[in-house]
Image (cartoon, rainbow, N blue to C red; front, top):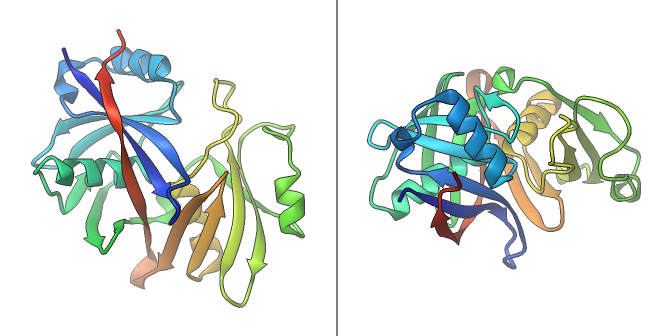
Length: 226
């Protein structure tokens, strides 16, 4: 039976937080898009990844309700997991483009472009308290990344992510693509505390590239829901 590996991505230094991710390393065992979407819905995480070719880094990403051309935390989690299973990958191939990946200390990194992040909107709030006080989710439609400065000079941010897609995910614990988008909009490096305890680093590189990194932790393996 095909396994579903589960990892937590953007774990804090104390082991808290981290967004759960499902990874089907034997992705070709579920070849049809409709079947993959059904698996992602049954798994119920913010995202589930199907690895179609581990050696080449070919991946396919789904939320419980939509297929994604690009996403941040699923790519970081998948890159980390493949390395743990003896298949280090330097590039992950998505519909949006090729995403470089590497490890530096305890962080796994990816490099992408803010324009690959579709359907997300950032909104600045006046204080961390205002972000923390938001209901989950706030009223309205469309993917919202609510944020406020913790220390603007230091580039530290408090953020929460609300997909508001109409599926079962009210709030994302951690989101790499939204962090990439915010760093691109602000044009500066950021350290982001999101959700209950997730830790995200975003760095602005040359020629429009943005790097996002974080810690990943294993959270077990389970039979794939059918």
